Amino acid sequence: MVPMSDIDSPQSYDLAIIGGGAAGVLTAIGALRGARQPLRLLILEPQLPLARGVAYATTWPEHLLNVPAGKMGGFPDAVEDFLDYLMQERVFPETPRDTLATMFVPRRLYAGYLRQRLQQALESSSAQLDIRAERVQALDRDVAGFRLTLASGRALLARKVVLATGNTLRPLPVRGATSLPQERRLEAWNFDAVHDIPGTAEVAIIGSGLSMVDTVMSLQAAGHHGRIHVLSRHALLPLPHASGPAADYDPQPLLAMDLRQRVRALRRHAAEAAQRGIPWQSVMERIRPLGQVLWQSLSCADQRRFLRHVVRYWDVHRHRIAAPLHAQLLELQRQGRLQLHRGRLQTAFHDGNCVRLDGLDGHRQPFQLEVQYVINATGVEMRAQAMRNPLLQQLLGSGIARPGPHGIGLDSAADGSLVDADGNLEPRVQVLGSLRIGSLWESLAIPELRAQAAQAAIALLR
Image (cartoon, rainbow, N blue to C red; front, side, top):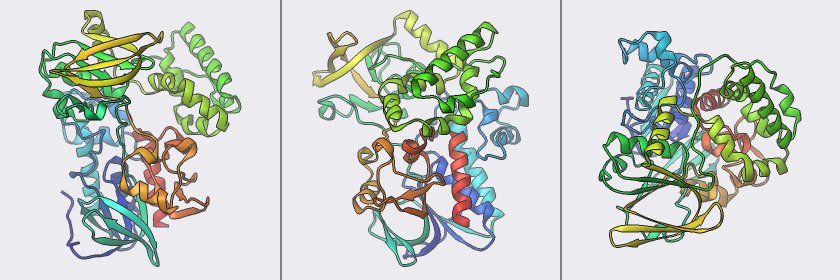
């Protein structure tokens, strides 16, 4: 455990990191490693221990990373650092390094890795780190920097700030959802509650993305054998990773194309790769380093078209899952235990021991389901105004921040600096993670977070 100093009275810090998930911890590690003088750093995170956030809060072994261990290092100059940690700690003592590098290991291991690296950075740093289990309610400009008001009513001062508030689950998109009994309406991220669902219960999962996969794997691990309904507007399951030769086409010409041309080009590259025995997954891997530039080089109109028509197809091809997990989903479908429904929910209400769901299917015909439990797996909320975060509401209301493109996240510059309501840069505030989706699109996975964290640490230490 990282030491805490006595911060019962108001104090002043050189850097305050708001959020102690993966992005916040990686920024703290970068600042500790880069400090050349005795700076005072602070992490404010209401849900300790650190580094868990939403993605790594699970304690269940069936929840796997969606990236092989060999690519999950937390630092741009050490992409195999997580693999080094697994080997040093002998987490899989019988597994050779080369094999382990290709494995999709349990996500619960990642938070421990980040905490260990944080502890090591602290022990060798000239800086001091405090940790406070508090929620920040407001951030206001002050003579020396910023004044942070905490949920307890106390205030802290900080010369510079990192906003790494993490992910928020979208609300259930159906009328009547909030009136359902809490024991019948669960969040996919409430992993323990999902495990406690009775084995014979009929379940409806709203959303067919990565959170749905977690939910189905939890139900399977807990011995659930009832029917599982998965409802979403497109009824597309995440697709699997695949091994095979690397694609060798040049992705740079995509940047000069509009959205329609890019989609056609990628389909052509995938078809040509298939003729050579190269999986389409390799075609997508080829453009991964360009993910953010591809988004930023689209016109505003094409970005809107992407959000309306393409985003779900992009997600299932770009954010893939381990092949064994995908095989389990297909087997459950074959058995009839997992049923995929395409449509849009309209209403939900409690009826005795059941929840009744009404909606329109893909042909705009009415459908109805009766289940015992409804699980919200609709994914990450992208609109800052809808994130139910008092700090973000205050920043937007005061004009210190403004919404990002298309109302997604907060607006930020290329270097991560916050942009205020007048369009001015605030380089003393760095924005990380999901808050940058509108500006960068690809901003949630470790490869993107580690680059942002390193960039933020350098900028703030400067």
